[in-house]
Length: 113
Image (cartoon, rainbow, N blue to C red; front, side, top):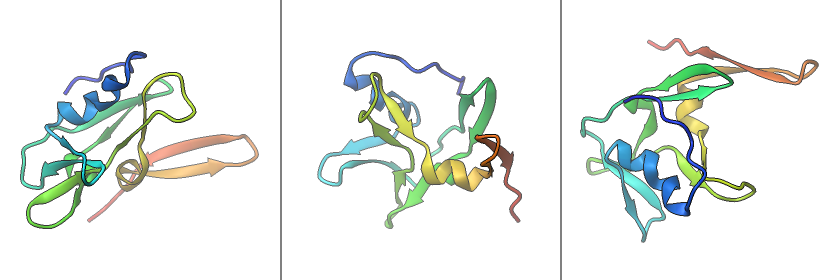
């Protein structure tokens, strides 16, 4: 999947990222779901000019019975355009380094076995 810019548009664009990987909205559960064994692409976000890739292994959260929740959540609160909460999938993929004195956050690829 090619990186895509954020689109300041109608609320329907906040669903775009989930649909790109084949996730479907389940109104009764209030989230997007995708088959755990479904072939899904990695997702690359560009943050401050640097690409950060999250694999499908890290953005699929098992809900049982070959059903996985899409780990990114759309958010429209506090902004003028659609945004996403990157949360656990990004944290699984990258360690975060908080520099309180400089007021910065750095990220390094997580090493897992």
